[in-house]
Length: 396
Image (cartoon, rainbow, N blue to C red; front, side, top):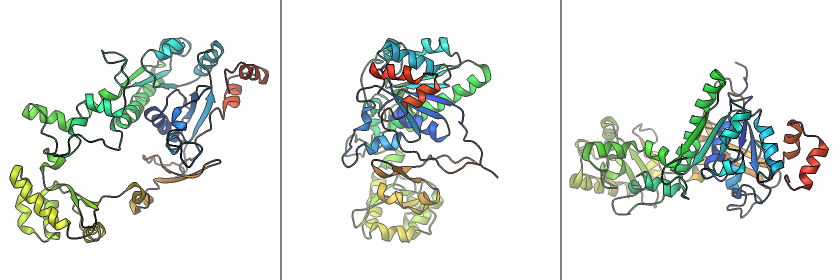
């Protein structure tokens, strides 16, 4: 079948977000075909631009979250800048912001103001704790939201204490994916009714709502199982991480009895089949025996042994190794984006595959204000009007 327009083609998004959660949300919208206009101030702009920029002019972090977007540098504190934003908002479909509650209202570009000129606007606010409640004005980051939501306390082993995962669960599951879900639901409704909505996304709420294992433990035992002793965090020998002789690791996820039986046959310990679901001291003993077996060979040796044994046992790869993995490659998950200044950047492709879709688009992240003139021209401003705004430093 032939290529069709991308699912969100024709939608215009005004992106006021910075750092990771919001920009990655709007990146997904852009990858699905929406026109995303990144609106930055005329100072430093999105400070992710310089975050960790060691070998490149623009941060790799920024590159990864901002491809396929346009950029305008606009001073919203100036009345003229506000007027420009309102003009842009009149034909926009979606606005996404990630300031603390109340900031956009003080700037004069909050939901009530935009709704008055564009009743069908979907206006999403991503924040740490939400738009109300006693903590709404508190500063925070991913670790703080996970801490308050009861998630961070459960991450780690029985002896480690809570550990910091190098995967921003609250930012990504909350500020990115949950925001995208809420935005798209509101867009469907706006298409049907002609009326937009305000979408309030709290990264703490979203983390809490997905703490299914922890909530299940509370409902069963009255509290969470101690860290490292729950079924999925070390309580079961059939589901865990085992170190290999070379310091590598294997992930054993054989929760089903049939898979555990295959593991036991493969490691030549059929006597352990009856120990599939054991806990406490008995589980500790089985885990120790299995750990000793995995320590007898290297990670790659075990990977070869289990390669054709379909029992949920895999080598634990680094990101560098994952880039070259046959499954990742077969799914076309790695893009090489050519940036005119920083050169080729390896990026993750949009992970959802649509039928009748074309190749993934890979325009590099824009420099600050790269599209200012063309965006303003599309809004009906003349060259002389744009020049006046630039002379007043309302735009770059």
